[in-house]
Image (cartoon, rainbow over all chains, first blue to last red):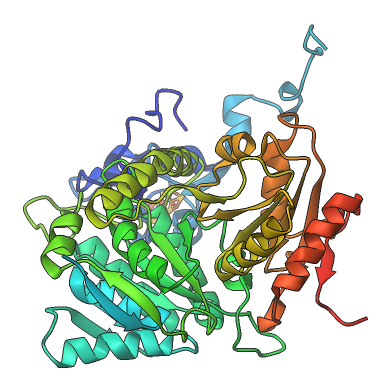
Length: 113
Length: 389
Ligand code: SF4
Ligand code: SF4
């Protein structure tokens, strides 16, 4: 949910999408709570993950597994589940970002109250 | 210029639809609306309109067909009552949030259960938060006039919200009255041609209707709807004035009857306003300073305008033809009292009456005025007027 997202006066009414194919511009990657991480050593390039990924977020180059489109990967874990050699590990985003739940919440009361 | 007709409320609505000649009308029967669509179906069968009439298998389908046709770019009109409206529910919200300017005649009937086919406002009041403009008619003439105006309001480029134009089941829907109708060409010119903002069938400009709308945009779309509803108030007044120039009958947000010097005022919707006016006439003849405000537009709610209109009254009674079950009063009572909060210091008394078609008489209205004068104010809990102990 980007802070630069347009305001209510700037978007078409009724939730209508007027630019066809704009789903690519819509980053679903921030829905993710766990991130698939590939171990290239283990990967045998069978491309099962590419076939099963519901979001087209597995990147393939020269018929080889080439990593992830993290802007769109929702972190469903299907790729990790289907990988026959356990080359994909799902890692909590919190571990990667280092942000802890303790960082949320009110630290001091608003001065005017 | 115009022509006088003897029409029931349902026929008056159907006659307006005939003159408008909408592109698509999906229909499913339900009492007391059935006669309306039956009358319109006859126009279709006679070739009096070009309308594509779609006979569907339920009201959910009727409203869905309406949404599809409207998104495609068609002018759509529809009608229902009570449980039919309830079955449409899901799509009623989708119509408004997709900003599709569909006009629906709602012939007010009590929602089951227990099953009852007679008038109250539980059906349209139930979906007062659905994002539709709501206009209530007092008599057959208003049914006709409001149907014609509803289309203009709904399709206005700054509004683009669907409109429910309601009339009381049986009391108005099946009562024959004199209706002064415009000429066909006058109506055609008044409503003009509908040009959809995003027609789905314009393949040169492809669009998507009804996509997923999550935490990041849904709220902005709701804000747009809320703003359009605010603008609708201005448009309703403009259209009401223009219609007045054309027909000699102009319309506002509400109708004030003998309120100028009135000490006690009753606010009501629909046909009951007519009963209340008759009571006021009798009481005025006895020298009583009483008046009636007939609220025409419930959504958007004309709060500051009502406050202004009530400013000289000593006390106000609000008559609700639906329960609401809040424990403190019906939906109209709550809106009126909220409107007055910190704006005017006067007692507001709530009455729930007429459920399931229970009659309301001029004597009962006089009794309400009597309560106001004697200081019997029902402000913490609505008084159920006309129920047996
Ligand atoms: S976690 Fe799900 S969305 Fe992400 S790459 Fe794997 S299969 Fe695709
Ligand atoms: S399923 Fe596993 S082994 Fe096959 S390509 Fe994907 S990561 Fe590599």
